[in-house]
Length: 196
Image 1: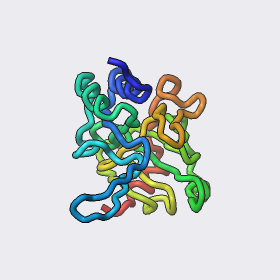
Image 2: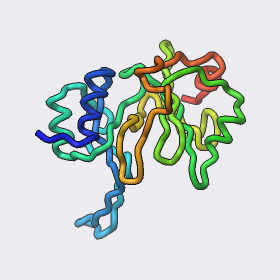
Image 3: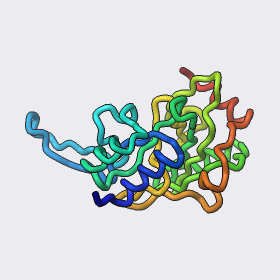
Image 4: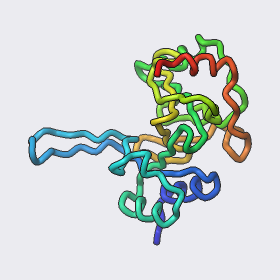
């Protein structure tokens, strides 16, 4: 079996990092709904699988099956208690103010795994705090364009190629170079105040 770059990455993340993976769209896909005649667009980063992140697996045979159906799919990884990971997703790009929002908090980020997103934003990846239920949220915890990817959410993993670019670890911040940090008490104060 010939495996694409993203397919190989999925196997590497599952086997070396022991994280479950699932395929997400590497580009927008548009089609006409035969019943309604309306145009439907499935956005890049949306799951290919029916159950989304709930279909994530570490089983290599299942990964081969999933990426066999969608060989160029990017690699999605669930966040939350299942993976013991939480991500602060700082959006950047046209009409996005995530970097400014984050700077305005004055919060200091400990040395942790960090990813540069396709848009130039950041993923700050932490250990998921035990004894808390922290849910996925968008622009509500830290402010505009800073999202929390936790229980009920997922991220595109570093190394994934999408049609418009690649997710990459920041130099010196891959899981081979730095551990996933614990959430600091200052960051936890924001997360714990998140309305359920």
